[in-house]
Length: 429
Image (cartoon, rainbow, N blue to C red; front, top):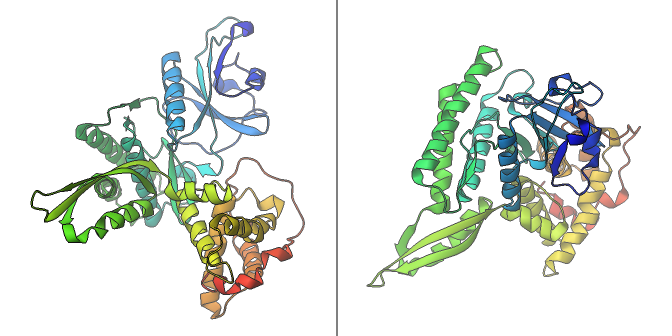
């Protein structure tokens, strides 16, 4: 029956998938192929699996649901929406005795991401719960702008990655989703929002019953928070705005606010009243990831939206220091990359590089240096701050990557990380 196995895959060479024990039910797969990673709650059996140096998630389900979710995730990827990467659909599975087994959907594990249950050690604190909900509200708004109805919005169906003090949310389970090319009606959006509110409240009550929720957290209030956060964001993204014709500067201000939220504007509809006294604008927001795209264009770094904003702020400040004012933006960006960012990431001991992704580590280092400078009332040198951060913070974090490097004995800080010419630019950090 092994020869009858069918693999539909997006990867160029799916043959390594053939080495997995598809003739066994997923619950019986041997420990030597299973990756011990935390996972969320799912209606289907899901297991993480080691595959040639990477980690994949395998979910047993029906063939129709597997193919539907596979196709939908591929479409969401093309739209550059935050979701897990589809790898394959496995069908025609059977045991050695000919017993038919369930088909499987294979997705790639999102590195440096964790389910919400794994993002706290003992109890979920109020500020963390709020940040989860805010991240999920942003994800939901992005999906709705693209015309995607989720149908099962929850913390369990979402993965979270640290994003410069906040979290970025990624869709994991899309089997109930539907993509509407004509966009979503208000009723569809509100239905998705109500599903989110009910599911989040249930998940938080579940944590409360297990003693893993801070006493200060009210599950109902936190769940209601996604409604408030989503509606506020949606209004900013889509609402029309009317103002006196003499205040046309408000058009640019509106675009700037949308960019600050991480969204790009495809077009703006401008209408002037018959008497010419007022102007009404209606933005059409189409793309999320404004700062991420700018950072990628300038440096080649792929980071979360908040991380990208923080790195760009650092880069922009670097441009204003020394003799860099007026120089080509892309040239200075490359200089910042090779003189500041890369030396810092190379200075991290190999056994600690699985703790955080580089962009998040850089952000946390800047935060650490700022706090130390405030506490000691002096400008702490960057090299000193890096050594302190590694010893007092980074070594004590849990690993959030899935692939770990070999251990190294000592920290070696490249001399080029100290940009003396730009030290005044660093004073604010």
